[in-house]
Image (cartoon, rainbow, N blue to C red; front, side, top):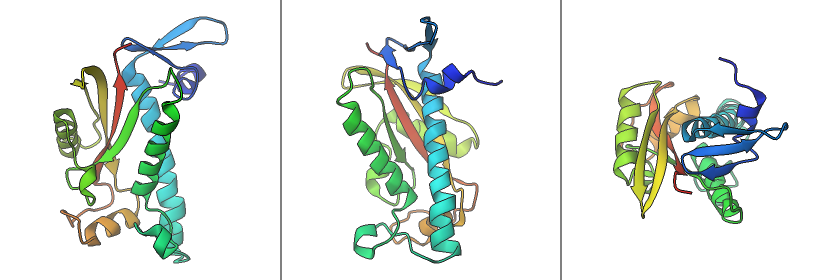
Amino acid sequence: MKKSPLSIAVGVTGLLATSSFVVAESTKGEQKLISPRAMADALHLVMDSDRTVYTRKIVNRLAAKEKVIKASEHFEDDKALVLPAQMFRFGSELVSERAEKLDDVNFSYSLQSIWPVNKQNAPKTEAEKAGLKYIAENKGKNYYTEETLGGTNYFTAVYPDIAVAPVCVTCHNKHKDSPRRDFKIGDVMGGVVIRIPLDS
C-alpha cells in the first residue's frame, strides 16, 4: 500500500505527542492521527536507510573496496572513518540533546545487541531483552510492546539490525571483544530500539 505524503512527512515535522497518538496538522487544517507504531516505523525507515547508505557507500567502499581510509572505533586517534554503529550512536545523542529544547518532540532510539561488542549496547529492560531475542529468532519481523519506565508508559519497538555489507561481518567477527564471531551477510546482528512516551 502506498503511503500518502502526509504520513511520510509526519515522522519529520509537525508532530505533537498526545496520549497514544501523534497529531499532525495537514495543509488543509485538518488533524490526522498517527499511531505510535506508524511513527516508530517511519523513524526507523529513515534511520535504517541513512545507516545502510553510510555503511555501503562510505565505509565499505572507502575502507574495504578502495582501501583509501580505514574505519576505526578509535577514529580520532587513527584519523579514520567513524564506524556505522558509532555514527548511529552519535546521531541518537544529538537527537536527544536537540529534543530537550523542543516541547513537542519526545522519543529515543539506540542500537543494542544480545552479542554486543561494546557492553553498553547490551539490553537493559525486559522489553529490550524480549525484543532482541524475538527479532534474532524471527528474521524479518519487528517487535512491538508497551513498557513502564520511571513511572512513564512507553511504546517500544525493536527492529532487526542486519549485516548489510562485508565490513559489518568482518568487524564483528574479528573484534577482540565480540562475543560472537560467525556473522554472515544478511544476519541479524542486533536491533534498533525506538521508545515513544504514551503519556501526555
